[in-house]
Image 1 (tube, rainbow, N blue to C red):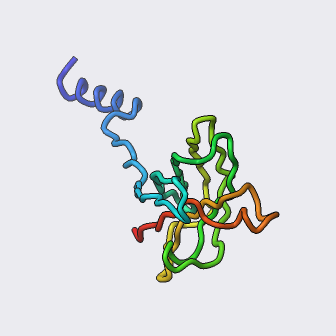
Image 2 (image 1 turned 120 degrees about the vertical axis):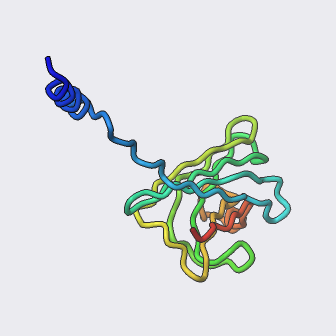
Length: 144
């Protein structure tokens, strides 16, 4: 077999197998800190993963009451200048050690407004009682 034919066959085999293509870049990840609120012991970390037309927010917390459940949201504003709910997040449920991880995909692009966004973990599982509403942990979301 001559060299030009061999080179052509090699090219065709690589092209058919996907050779020479590059993998898609990883989705952009943005981290933030969840701080203590209202004299709680609850703190942790968070991560935003941007998608096309959506983003995923994951929060990892420690210091919650064992086996407790907490309503959580992304709010407009900041931890120091709170505002209304922008997006509901999945229920935050602590294990027997008071540790929780919650992940929610939000069906909107990640575009933090000038007024800001923050993740808020409330004291109780719902707003059925006034004592459930205060925040136990809060984290401002970075503009990125």
